[in-house]
Every structure is written in C-alpha cells, then in structure tokens.
Image (cartoon, rainbow, N blue to C red; front, side, top):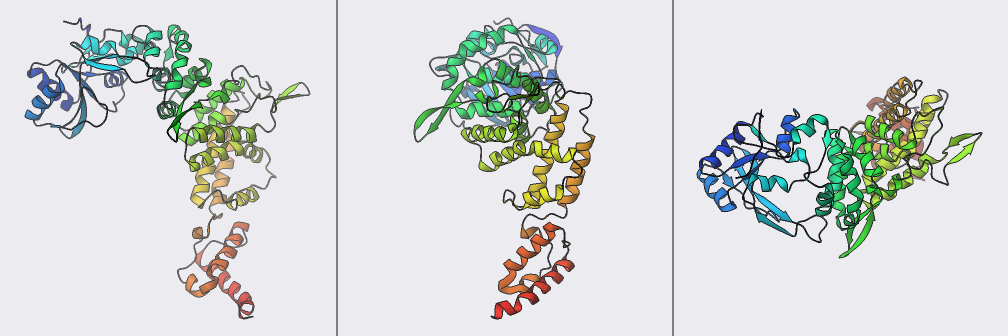
Length: 487
C-alpha cells in the first residue's frame, strides 16, 4: 500500500464532503478530498469546489452513491474516470485514482489509465501545493511537502520541472497563474526548466492560454505572475489558433518583452518601464479591461520610434497612442469582442490626456468630456461614466507606479470627483435626456430633430436636463421652425 505520508495536521471539511467520503469508505473504497480544495483550506480561503479522488471505479461510484441517495450525472466530453455527482444539493466531481501517459499533444495526455493508489494519483499532478489530499477525518496526506511550500510561499513542481512542463506545456502558464493567485515565488529549478518546453507551446490552443492569462491578470498578485511570464521568455512564444479549419500561429505577448531593463527618466520614475508597469497593474482594480490597459499603458516606451533623448533625458512622446495601437493588435488577435478591445484602447490612449487635465487647472475638462460624449464611442452617459472611472483608476495606479515621494494622487482623486459631477449634466444619447412623455406627441415628425437640438444644448451647458426645461426649449424650437416646415 502507498506510504501516504499522513501528517498530524487536519483541515475542516464541509459536512456533505465528509459524508460523501465516508459513504465510499464504508463500501470498501479509499476516498479523499484532493488538490486545490485542500490547498485553499490550508491558506484560509474558501475553496471554489471540492474534488474527490477514490479507489472506486466509475461503475462502483455510481452503484454506491446512487444507493446512498446521490444522483450520478452522465459525463459530457472527455472525462475519463470522472463522475459528476449531485450530493446534498451540490455537484462534486468524483474521480477514480488515475495515471497519465503523455505523447505528442502539448496538453492532453495520450492515454489515461486507472491507478491502484492515491500515491500514483498524486504523482501525476503539477505542483506540490496541488498534490495534497485529506480523508474524511480531515487528516492531510502530503507526500511532496506541499504544506511546507505553502508556508514558504514557494512554487515547486511534483518531481522534475523539466518533465512536468514537457508533459503538458499548459503547466508553464499555470505556473505563472499560480504564482499570481497564491503570491508564491517559483523555485530556481522551475524557472530554469521553463525554456526547455517552449517548443511545446506552439501546440497549445489560444483558448487555453487565454483562460490562464485572464485568471493571472485578475489575481491578487498579478505582478508576480506577469513577471514570470515575461522574464522567462514565455511571453515571446506563440500558441495555436484555428481559422477556417486550419491552424495558425498566435504570438502571445512579444510586445512586452522589451520592457524589462528599459530605463525611464529618473526625475519622475524610480523604476524601469517593466517594474513601473507591474506596480501599475498591481494597483489597478481587478477588472479585465482595467488590468489589460494597465499592462499596455506604457508598452510602447523604449521602442525605437518612440524613445528619444532630449537634453540628456529619456522621453517617450506618443507612447500613449502607440500603446493603444499595440493593445488593439494584441486583443484583436486574442479574439476579444470589439467592445472590450475598444474600452482597453480608450483607456491606454487617454491616460496621458487625463494626467494633463489633472495637472493643468485652466484646461477645459468640460470641453474634453463633451467631445468624448459626441465621439460616438459611447452609447449612454452610464457607459461614458464607467470608462472615465476606469481611466481615473488607471491613472491613479500609474502615479503610484512612479515610485517617487512627490507622486501623490490627491489631484487625481479630486479630478475624478469633478468629472463625475460633470457627467451628471453630460448626456451622450438623446435617450439620456429627461424630457416629458408628451414631447414626442408634441413634436410629431420633428421629434428626432428636436431631441438632437436639445442634446447639443444640454451638452454645451446652456440647457438644464430637466423635464420642464426641455419641454419649454422644445416648444420654442417648434415655434421657430413652424414656418420653415410649412414652406
């Protein structure tokens, strides 16, 4: 029997999970909670789900759990040895101990087989912190010292990192994602082994790479994962897209690879361009558009057609516009919907403009906002307001990322409040006007022209957006144009 390396530690299990394990054990089958649920419980986090591994084969799982009142759900797709089970109102994945053999595919195993022990099942897993199990009493089985690595915030593979990465190249991206989600430092051995598997990355689907990268971006320590992604060279690789039945290469993020060690003007920046980017990402609220924008807001710095030296100082004039172009190219090739692409492009393109208005009190912010309202980029005032809030958050993070004592954010906070107040009187579309319900009947065929006139006047600040004011202005408009309509 497998030397389980049972520790003296225990974790609390939900009652339903404990009961499920005990039902299987009573029928003569070893059963354990395994993987991320054990890891997250040890970290004091609520697990997203509870996965179960057992010696029982799928037919035994169905027989034993059905007799105990569970509903075994027919699996969908490639789910060898995995049985979805509805138990006490929740869905659990109950998997038979299994092993894997890898071949030419960059991610999926060439063969999956039933294993005879928990040890074999844990040995196939990627990282030590994911290779822990707990029995019905909460006793932890930890053959690869995952608990120790959790305490040390150390990300290590189960066994040889070179073998783990060559088996499944997606583990390269999972390493970056777990470094970000768990705020863990990858071992030197892990980092050194990554490039040896880069040739396998081209076989990974864009969908898989995108999923892992998005989870990384939204993680609490996104900067740590991004740093591993770029400095390891993984960002310079290409994965696989598919169009019209044919595969094609999709560059991952080579646009970022020049940023490490790219110097900036020390009068304003304490860090190089990459470290500044990481700090900015880390201080940007965890929304997908916001984090992508933070990642690309200075991506053009240091490029040959952007970087210059004037009066002995580095400058990057136009990096906002060029950075927006880079963001558009990357997100488009990654298959993001146009609305997401447009929002990120807007944030990157406008971040220097926002800084300008913060620093120049005499600048006409209302005029800028009115121009944005009429630009056609936004369908409603609410949408424009959301974009401006995200832009303000990005710019605050950008200031923090400068790392200088004088890089305070009070001015940005005050300007954000001013923009919010202006938005209250800056409708984007005629449907944002608070006109009375009787106006369309009053205006008849001229309703469209009337509303467009009212919208422009409200945006100009010469007309209040209230039912009474709009009704009066509409009546005057109709009176002025009555003769023209008759002629």
